[in-house]
Picture 1 (spheres, rainbow, N blue to C red):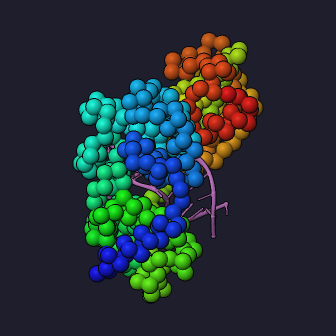
Picture 2: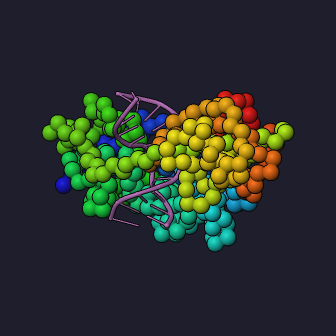
Picture 3: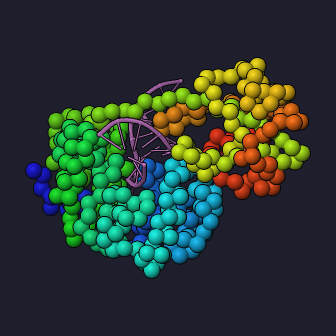
Length: 351
DNA sequence: AAGTCGTGGAA
DNA sequence: TTTCCAAGACT
């Protein structure tokens, strides 16, 4: 079994020399740490930083965030992805205010009861803000520990998650839990990277099992990769004077709560002729199909969206769905939209 | 427990 | 071009 004290000593010495100065590291305010952790879930520091700064400026305290409108939160989150994080963020802020008098709970269990706060985020807040000896396990930690200890158990298996969590807890320096946790992650993000790790400058190289056996490139092991499915989105650009039709996405599908153009989804790509047939059938005949304005291939985690934007004109007596709303140009820019729509608006100088 | 949820950058 | 995957959580 690796020596925990050696691991932590080397790690913390390295961290004090090499860590990047980031705004959420200069505070122990649980609100700001929580906000940064949620923003950084599955998100690189370079991508999340600007969003963090905007959120802190717009809502400096958890009480102010709790009083915010959900759509305003989604709008500020626009472009960051995984939009359930934004909705859960607001829910959790209201939990803190209503159930805890505006103060974040100071235990792992209390934190994990907040919406959108799982084991990782609860451990991060508990260790960083309250000095509790909770070990974090994120993608960086999986990689660093798999290599350091030479563990080939798939990190996306139940056994693997259990094993790595236990090892992380063993190696944790309980007296410096917050810094220790951040140090492992920082090492994984900057030195022990997925590709081309910089082992020569790694503080753990002397006792790294993978380096010793030449297996750095083979660790960590992942079991399964989920397949991606293709979807065909035919977006309808319909205007009425100065206004354009938009709709809000609901249900359990992607981009919940965000706005988009009226959408006709099809099992495969549509020709101009088949689009007209589909529209005539669905909303009454007489549709006029204009230009195909834009085509985008948009890649998500488990889906590839083939988006085509058509300029179309409904027949005068068409029965358009009530959820299609006419929005003026002025208001359009205020709507939270997925990147596909944002790109289309940029192209046509809408919004 | 396996699937699902965005987006962008790097190799 | 394709593939990987990033300070994960929820269902």
